[in-house]
Image (cartoon, rainbow, N blue to C red; front, side, top):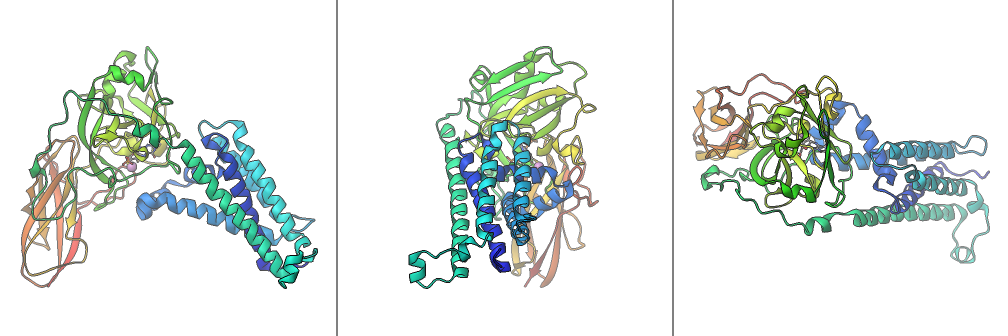
Length: 513
Ligand SMILES: Nc1nc2c(c(=O)[nH]1)N[C@H]1C(S)=C(S)[C@@H](COP(=O)(O)O)O[C@H]1N2
Ligand SMILES: [Mo]
């Protein structure tokens, strides 16, 4: 065996991994969505990551957490492949073994996905075979020793350089097939056409119009209604599920007298309603932005459940999405007067795909992880003492009503405030109870009432403003606390988001000068 430099060996490992992943990605186009091993491995990593690490990723990267994960998975595979290739020998082919191990892990990850069939591991296996072939070729010494092609010889390319070029070539082909496969796969499966051709049903009693004075004047605050583009997004889906209306089903089963499965067409027999509801993520830290407000169109879950004959001892609805996420919601929250919805529209258009197209749950008053299942396909009537939903298994609470909270949007931390009049402001929320007042304190001064934007409903956030005279130059602090309509004031006790939502008063330092 020719002695190949460390760098070239590591390069061979990376090229082999690129070829394996690229071929697998390209071939996956011909199989079910589960066949994409790269995404399957990422999904497995998400599922196997301990709760606190997930929490850290959400806190640190927010909506970019998935991009971070995808990049990390590819970087990790590249590093492993490079290291494994270093030891590739004919007696102990560590690189080959590493690729085989990768193929086994990839196949297992594929088969673990909901809806995966055994044939879906074929792209992974063929990819692995290609990766091994590339690795063996590059580490065999054949290219460096073999007869140079006439053109290479003419160009004076030496054997080491020849090997680097061939290695780069394989890496490039792998990369191109991978990107090509990902792009083609996405195009083939995309439901954006299905979504574009969907017109929301006309609603007989639209949500009450939004009065202009929900929005305080004189301060730049978030819009009372969040645009779909700005709406926060949190989910465990590495690849946004692409579920067409024709393929969508909602099965209602478990502790019921009559099991039923609705098609999307079947929903027409129910009365469409419209409701403005503020969604909040339990992972939102004090002062965080994992909260948004939209007008939702859809059907009352209560209406969908009406004919099922729910057993009296059922206390939980376990909702499941097409990608296997689950949330456990109290039966009461889905059947009482709050009009929990199976939402199909968001701000007047069909649900954006990343927000659950074609249908999701929207439950006023509960954090998203126990209620707001996107791409929902299954409602099982069950009991809290019989089963646990996705995040509860990871140590989060089984029931999670939204806490009374406020946030300071203006000033931003460290903002320079010129001496003179200024208006501060923010948002406050206590969905299902509603906000009664917001108080603000500058430094250690007395609590003063903020001005409240008009209340739209108890299920929506309330914007507030606070006009102030900046006189004394220097560093100052503004602190806020909200009181809900039950008279309960936001607690000063600091709590982390886990297990049932962060608490504490938001506080921001600013600079008067
Ligand atoms: N299928 C699915 N639905 C889901 C989740 C998920 O991971 N998968 N996350 C939930 C959580 S934790 C929140 S906070 C809300 C966020 O909804 P949004 O992305 O539309 O803002 O969706 C909920 N629904
Ligand atoms: Mo969440």
